[in-house]
Image 1 (cartoon, rainbow, N blue to C red):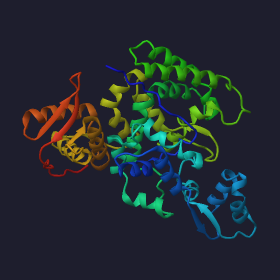
Image 2 (image 1 turned 90 degrees about the horizontal axis):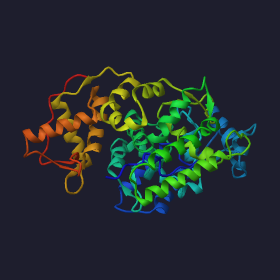
Image 3 (image 1 turned 90 degrees about the vertical axis):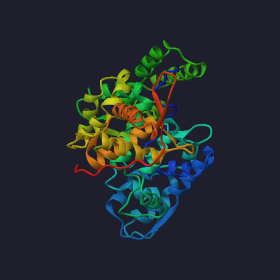
Image 4 (image 1 turned 120 degrees about the vertical axis):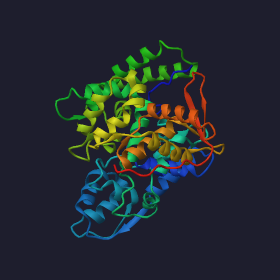
Length: 417
């Protein structure tokens, strides 16, 4: 059986702010198939549209323009906003949100090149299916956890509702996506980041990547792989060689080192695992949430066990929640509701995604923990007890794959968190 290579299938400097994924998957969910040009164009056209604003301008906006909008194309905006007597200016929608002091980092602005670059973030995290550019079930999780009011903020600027900020529920999905798709690189990288005494910059972090990539390639090449996977690993070996050329250099600009590392640092500011002393620069510090994750996550080779048995317990600790284990009745109700929301036209939904949505709802709405592994046990017992209600399929290894609920699930009487 093929082994999943948990290394991001794409990395570029446009992949920084996770909030844009909410709009991307929303567009993807509206059509059965699409293409990268259409999806990327819709995203960039929305975020780059200009909003006319009048002075006085906030200090956060003027600081943002001073530090981030430095190219010649922004000369008019800088002249209008930074003058001694500011005048009205047309500011891109994304700039108004990126300058928000509540956002942990204000880098990651999209541009015309992002049309062909940023959508690969969705495929790398298993939110969007490559080739058809159609929504995957995990992408639907993000759709269901994104209120329509947030999407409306992409259509019209709302100072009090920044769609680039992540809710706890959205962050949970995206953290799971990263661990499920990049743990082979993230775990050794994060381990070594913990050795820095205080802050570190992306070049210092990037200098760690060649050895990590080569070690991963060597280990993975020992397994049974398809020709496509071996070609992918060969490419990663070349990426390591390219990054190595810039190791220790601080005068090389944005190179392969920064490209490979930025996607493994910036999004974790949105997720609360890293923080930036200066939101304009690529310098980072670890947060207590980062250390909690690394305490509970024993290793890259134990990622499946962690995601199945410790993920929600870890999230509860990160958010300081006092929790209890979900009862069988609570678990069944949450799984039934999640299955209804994620089901295909044939009525089936993937067990893992159904369990992930159920676990997120229970944790943040009810302060109950339902790990993915427990969800599988609940479904097996439930199917034995009520075969006329629960039906599921298994894969070639005998593991649960898809579940279908043949009639509505009756929720239990609500209990206090």
